[in-house]
Amino acid sequence: MASEENQNIIAIDGPSGTGKSTTAKTVAKELGWTYLDTGAMYRAIAWVIENEKQGNNQWLVARGKQLNEILGKTQISFDENNRVLINGVNRENEIRDPKISEVVSRYSSIPVIRAALTAQQREIGSKQPCVLDGRDIGTAVFPNAKYKFFLTTDYKTRAVRRLLELQNLGKAGDETLESVEKNLRERDELDSKREVAPLVRAKEAIEIDTSHLTIQQQVQRVLQSVGEAARCKHSPNTTPRLQCPIQS
Ligand code: DC
Image (cartoon, rainbow, N blue to C red; front, side, top):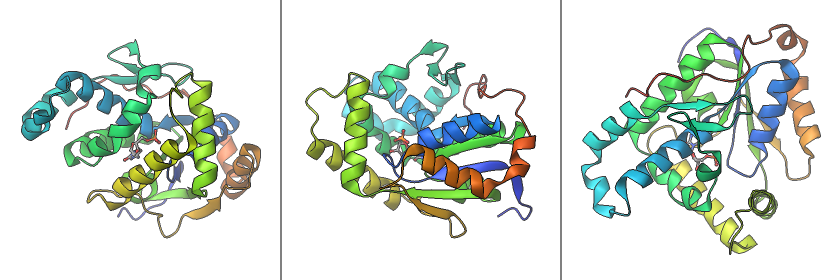
């Protein structure tokens, strides 16, 4: 672990459906810092791999070489509205599909994928003050971040939020509260039990239970902890640029 505290990083970790992304995005906007949605990066890679393997489940057997090739030719970037572009094409809609939610935790447990995305996240965070949300920001990506938060919420509330989100995106399909909760539980299980950088609260992270909080209240808690000093450091560019291919 690096010794010096990094005052330019706000790490917001926790499982999905806890309001991490909205909180992180709003905090970044309030402070004028860059926002980086690291879950979107894992979703992007999952989407690319799903397309490459075309339903061939034997594919993963030979994944070492193919994964490196895929990572090397995949460019992930974000537009000014934080929508994900894969090789320059807007894939925001595709990566939010429940089909990707079902498989993403499987891919995000693969060390070579984590190494590649972690390197990119560190590079972006080293160039500008940055709010990152994810699962391992405060433990693995920036263990020396000065500001660390871990959001939790009860399952019922998370399922309601997630289903609403899918409905708003027009992606709810046949999903029910039960099917959404099942997916959340399965992903939590995979995310917290994987060997590399599992979902776990950094011991110094401030835990915020968002079950009964509005987004504004969550944002206020984070901003109060971060304090005024952070407001003085605006990021020159609030949208992350990730133009180079991912190298593993
Ligand atoms: O936040 P999200 O639901 O969009 O994240 C999608 C998946 O990516 C999630 O199931 C776990 C994985 N993830 C991760 O392993 N590490 C991160 N820093 C962010 C997300």
